[in-house]
Image (cartoon, rainbow, N blue to C red; front, side):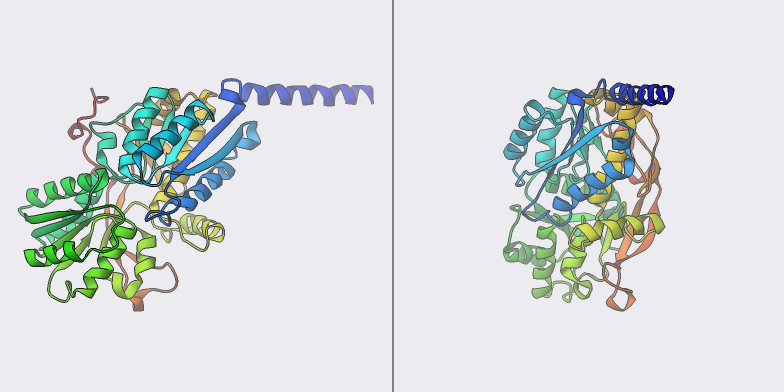
Length: 404
């Protein structure tokens, strides 16, 4: 009996030492994740509380806590203000000992947090923000841009629209970093394919009344009105364009960034026929459907957007890198994430380039007609798959200082 007790005590000590070794180089013995998102405004459904759900699902599904690591998820609302987002990031890094910030829709906020993260030697996993500058001139050894970006959207939706005959454009653009980048990248695609830009107008973020902007677009006689906006701005501009009879009058709308939640808000009778570029759709295969079912059960029935999927998948890969290093040092973890091939249930196999760009396929999808939909959230049919090596900007063209 005494020998049995000695054996059990020895095993307990070994287990404790093993857990201690696992977290020996983890700061404060806790991996602390900060979900920085829009919790109350125009991007809240496409990111927001759902990104917190996705982060917690990643912790659970990774199994990292069962292997001796402690993980904590906290969240905050950046209110779409770079100064607010910057203040939260500094508080998290300096006082709350956050190791990695995730999500961050709003490119203005993300670009600010990108620099702070670099200065503090932490890690930043961007899923919500779109600006391709995050892997271009503003690239950082501490940031990974996971889900999508403005170059991808421009070359997906924009390129397909021009090639199908939409060769004259007028841009209605959200007046901040994201809108400017999306307009810039799409205009380059339009011009490259022989099209013309007849005009552009910029609307303040979270605009409620688009009438004056839409009237200018209508007067331009452009075949395509390019909506370089997102979330509530996109749905409001599409709804108000319908009120003005813009599509009935012969012009078409190009929603350059449309999320699943936007289609849900618009309804299929209004959104049908929209061409959208996406990197994740919940109804793709058994794994994505299983994830969506669990996610929706926690997030008010909302089905996951590509932003939510990106939060989940990027954290799964982050945990793999932390465990490989037995450290949560931000700079080292991001380097290890680039070194390891990616593989997760939502995006499949992929890689992360030296500029921080996560590489995976993109999908050109069309919003279904009401008669084609088999039920709630069944909104997309895939028109084309853009291979991973073509979906994102070539490494040599980004002007990222990390690219030698």
